[in-house]
Amino acid sequence: MIRSITQQKPMEEIEHLLEGMDRIFVIGCGTCTTLTRTGGVEQVAAMAEDLSARGKVITGTTVVPVACDNLTSDILSEFGARMNQADALLVMSCAYGVQTLASQLGQMVVPAQNTLFIGKENAAGQFNEICTQCGTCVIGETGGICPVTTCHKGLVNGPCGGTNNGKCEIDSNKDCAWTMIYNRLKELDRLDSMRTYKKPRNHLGEPSPGKFLIPEN
Ligand code: SF4
Ligand code: SF4
Image (cartoon, rainbow, N blue to C red; front, side, top):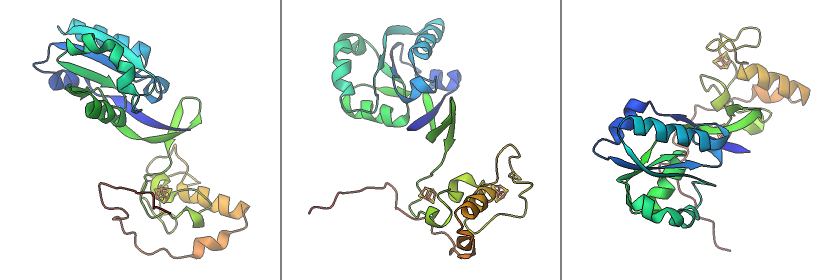
């Protein structure tokens, strides 16, 4: 299952974002930030305590099931009075959740997290980015392993000169993406794919902001 991977902003930055706002309601998310322990029940309680110690009044806290779901504003309606007493809602979810709440609630919304990437859980508690959504997918010729994301240099035509015993020259704890691709293609008896030259990448795969409309029949 994919997860939005977040990291809490330094408290000094959160304090700066909350400058002039004395009364705060803290909202966590029961999905991604609970799993990554950046915005679950314990982290929300710790944040409330920390903000209290810094002189803020906490008008309430809650952890909603899925902050990025449109139903979240309905779920939050039971906290309407406590939220209305607040100058700002501090949201401990990914930016998708923060934006969802900002679009639905007529209140100042402040993110407590930096959203890093969409991650796949490879082992308990270990998340790796596997796709940077580049818009021009090459994994049909790399055995399903993405070099754009998995190679530190984003190389699409084979390894750089620094690969060393299957490890990456930039991070020796990490397998070289192109060694992984070579091994996978060898297993699949498709090593000939390595010989296909890929043109220089057009990084404008999808103009930003991206949009997609399901075509009508
Ligand atoms: S090439 Fe990699 S980054 Fe680009 S769409 Fe495919 S998997 Fe995602
Ligand atoms: S060693 Fe491998 S993964 Fe690292 S930058 Fe070079 S080709 Fe990419």
